[in-house]
Image 1: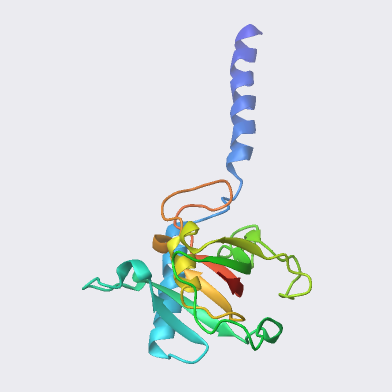
Image 2 (image 1 turned 120 degrees about the vertical axis):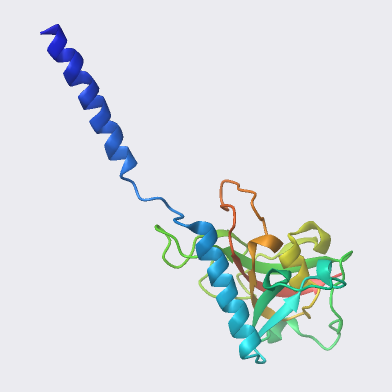
Length: 195
């Protein structure tokens, strides 16, 4: 009887472990998926440039001789937010040493549990941006990831953009609790003010 129990107990233990192994990973082929998605966005912007879809070279590579797609962010320019544009509004753009006031929402590419992409950070909670309900954040242009900083240094007050940042200009191969490594980041950004 003791010998029989010694064979049955390991079999039960192994069976219970197998069930846990059957879970579907959240971020399957994440690097490949994200790099392919960014290259598609980049190629669409290059092949069919328009007023609303464009590429912007990162400020960190302005003097580089060789250029690769990952040296750029892709931006989709949405309708400007008229409530933010006043006659006395600055007409320039922020520089690296400025501080900004922005509303934003950042999300990842679609994954197993998040078919439209997981929102990992935001300053407004409504489905669409509204200057009335938004709680903008203030921070230094130099204090954010390179891709976000690149976008800010090309925006005017009232600009409302969707910004696609390749992992090379985002968090790269660093992983934290909310953003997996190699993540293409999609930010909706509204520049409200700078100083």
